Amino acid sequence: MNSLIIKYALIAWVIGCAMLFLGQQLSLQHSLKILLWLQPDATHQQQSLDNFLLEPERMNVLYEPSSSEKYVVDHAEELGLLANTWENMTTPSCRIFTDPALPNYSSLQSYRKELVEYTQRTDDFETDIKDLRIPLRAATLAWHFWIRRALLPPMRHPDLCFDPEKTYKDLFTMTYMVHDWEVMCKRLTPFSRTVFIDMGASLAFYDSAKNSPAVYILDTYKKFGFVFDHVYAFEITGQAPTSVFEMVPSNMLSQYHWINVGVEADPEAKMNPLRMLLEQFTEEDFVVIKLDIDHSAIEVPLAYQLLNDDRYSKMVDQLYFEHHVFQLELSPAWAESMQGSIKMSMDLFGGLRKKGIASHFWI
Image: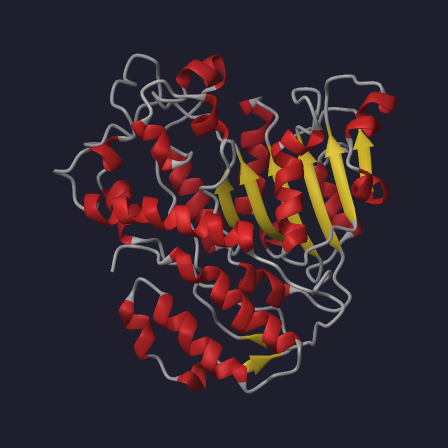
């Protein structure tokens, strides 16, 4: 089965996590069976439930790329995804969605429809749990296979491939991001601190904070019971604090830390936010990072620090990164900031996911 069956992700969250929090332990094995049934690789479904016992430790996560991801990585050269200069960037990365002759074409069209349903389910979702840490009990599954969005070009919503004008809506919609809320809530403990590190945090580009992608993602987390204790907002462009805090939503003021300086990539630098993680937080905390400073010489090394240093991979739960690689569809916007190939980006994000960091293409 090539499709990720993302439309059941929210059902799994309700049954697998929220019911566990409410003390209905009998639901655990039932929810586990549901989660196994949802996975695209049926071979995992035959594993004994004896391998899925309650453990008091942080949950281990296995990442298995979808068949479409594997096809793209294995055929990157013929798909034109090795381009790393303006001269050899000639093939649209959208071809996997638009060429009926390619394998997985049919399943990817189904995937587009499932994204619509997933988005609607997210919009409609309601819960009485305001903060997941309050009813949380220290019990987690030992293993879980993610319900996640495939890592695929064009690194945006696939509808961009069917929009010849490349409109603002298709360039900047965030409804292609699929989150496994069930995995995330089981990573929490009753005493986890919740941290959002925003690198490239200017709100000046938007007529109101509600149009900011960062505020949108924070509101989405809040909807599912993830209330952030700290939002560290790094921004190099000088802005008057009064104008910044006028834009910050009132419900975020108490946790919002405005840091009006640029970040640094040197692992020992004071302004490397990853260093702050090691000094101030632990593996038990829930950490989300957004990396979008539009400067490849700094943000790419930071991303590889997350990949190569296991201290970070044990601490960071989610990463949102706009990786500016050579890609035909986004080249007008990314221009001179592009560095590396789409294949390089997929290897990076796939490696991060295998380390346990759920990584998403940012806008």
